[in-house]
Length: 65
Image 1 (cartoon, rainbow, N blue to C red):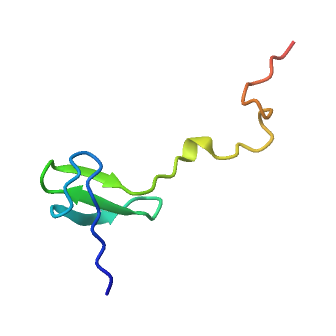
Image 2: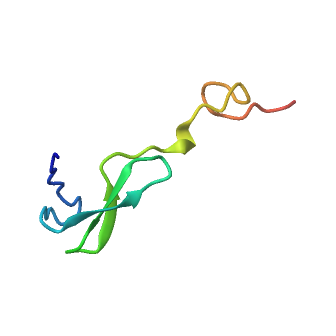
């Protein structure tokens, strides 16, 4: 078994970080017992996913004349 010391993104403590479930994206969530904050090592933002050809590549809605 591999033990990974994950530093807290906020207070940089490594001894007080514990696993805290999984996010909707499937990535592991962590909680720092020292500062009581949760974080992930990797994030996925679905707001930037491809919208198809509904809008042009610039992301601006075309103006109907």
